[in-house]
Image 1 (cartoon, rainbow, N blue to C red):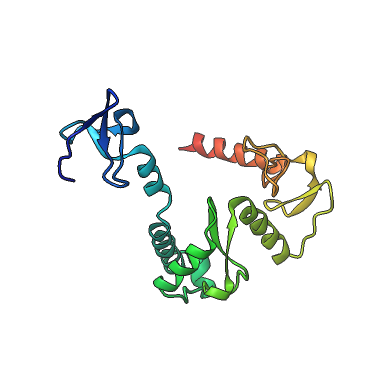
Image 2 (cartoon, one colour; image 1 turned 90 degrees about the vertical axis):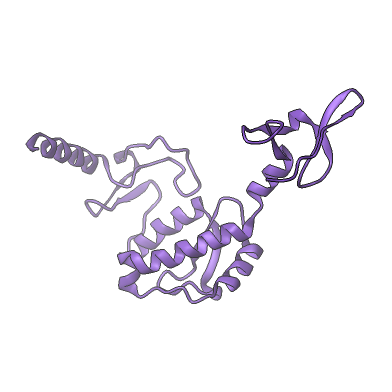
Length: 199
């Protein structure tokens, strides 16, 4: 715990020195806690927000560990022999230079490894579009305007044959349509309820 720093009265307002930026700020600029002498957090709200959201090294290390775990535990990656071929420090440096808020690390070539020339930062919406596009490409399916491929029954149907989801529309799915068609969704529900009655 940081050493105790007494409060100051400035222009009739009680202030406290922030342990990070070292400026005196009004007490309302600090979060309340139970384990300090004055009941206030050591850093002001502004400094704490910056510390929470701008630690890209910490995020990079978490992402790196996630990639290593994915390629060693996920069967899809193990079958294709995907590896992480970049050191932690190289990855942290790459991540800091390519970071975008809310982005994810993606491989340009899905059959390639996690290595500097094959990695990119993209948004989740771009990732979902790429994933669906990659799946369609792998089975040589091209969706014409107004149609959508159902991965469950393997047929191309009209967009009106798909239920809408409650998710917010994105560029990758502007109409918020489900992956499977209405017929397949109904069949899944029927099967689920009949299986649950047997138990």
